[in-house]
Amino acid sequence: MPRLKEWLAEADPDIVAIQETKVEDALFPFADLEDTGYEIAISGQKRYNGVCFLSKKPLENVTMGFGDDSWEDDRRIITAVIDGVLVINTYVPNGTQVGIDKWEYKMRWLERFRKLCNELGTSQDKMVWLGDINVAPKPEDVYDSKKVLGGVGHHPDEFVRLNKICDWGWTDVFRKLHPEERAYTFWDFRMPSVLDRDLGWRIDHIYASEPMAEQVTKCWVDRDARAKEKPSDHAPLLAEFDWK
Image (cartoon, rainbow, N blue to C red; front, side, top):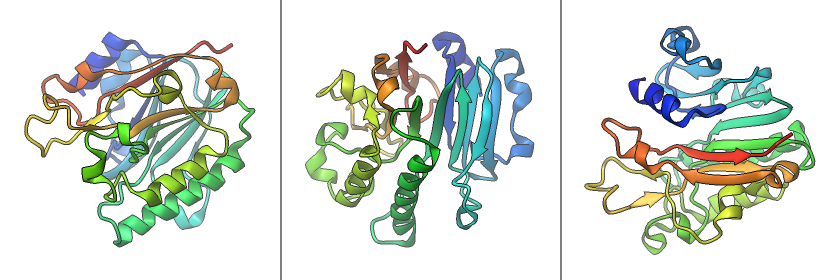
């Protein structure tokens, strides 16, 4: 919480999408954020998953999940209309290990999310999809593609499913503005000197529908936040839109 509040004061974002809150709704630390001025919407569960919005503008038509009873305990999606834009905040399953049940769950989750895109609107609507996508889709999105290709996060089965989602009409706004740049959002704590050696992955993404992609002006990774004391293993990914 101290890291989050410090970053909110420094970056001053209008909208914040948080993933992996790992706290049930009744125990969410609303009081700690009361003095920040952000409106809050949450969907969480004990010890696992959890997604959250912080917004300076009203959060309207907030929904959670797929709206499908078979995914009832999947607290990985929250949507809200913010200033006329539908924003979808997701924490995509990691998959843990290729071939096990959790991997198959990730594949089915991505397939179900593709259907959700059609249910929420069309690519001509004002929509933004963002979060921890847990897929590094291109060789330049990971520190050593040849080494990790075929593993969790950089696997052809993930690429196929993410491409099908993007075929809905999503534009990866970081890649739109930085077609070849290597800029990572995640560095694994378990690897020594991982940030200094830049052994990172770009697994946090911001996607925009056609009208929003036309209005994106900037997208960058706040690497400095990852370098501070007791950080998250993810760095914030930010984008600016000139939307009207």
